[in-house]
Image 1: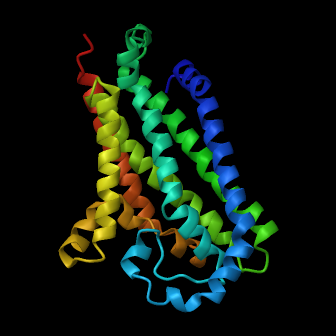
Image 2: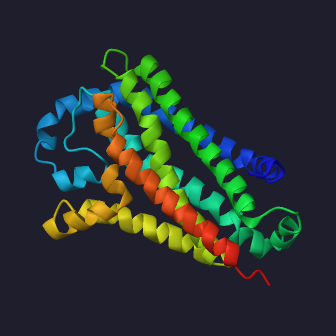
Length: 269
């Protein structure tokens, strides 16, 4: 790692990271504040949700709607879908700037003028991205615990489950980062890099959703990142799914390893 490149990247990206953190907390505060009202409404209409399509519920990361469970509520309203969009948007936007953005802005040549190996440049920026991911994930968990304690006390929020979500959330975001950085290296046009990253993320998510309808797709889903992401199970059990975390980290390692390999051989003229 090169400390100067790392510090430069952090200096450039801390403001957008702060915006994401503030936005996340504002959204979580709103969700938890309306939870008591939402819970009472669901209890009065519980019969309507018994026959709710399970496949559609899987789109939001749950198998059923439990009006008494704050973990179930926060998974449906945040962790199962919205949080995935937010974290993917952050990661893809960050990765876009790492190579493709630098090429587009004409600043990569200046960066390459430093007597630093290419792999160190990419690794330094990658570590800054990983740091930003950790900040967002830890901030999310802190918000769930803090706002849940205020507005959803007595609902049995599992604090060990919240802690167990941290490595899962970081691993999922790292997996997205792996192929997003790869696309940023492969494409000089940042728009193409973003489209490729968004497209693959959307493909993985829709594949996971469609797998509930098809046995064939269910087998293919093993090769998608969202097969290994089950936030409600983690929150309820309080255990880290080690196998899922390792598989997601393998996605990240392969993607970033390929990024370094291609960047070492990339013609920047």
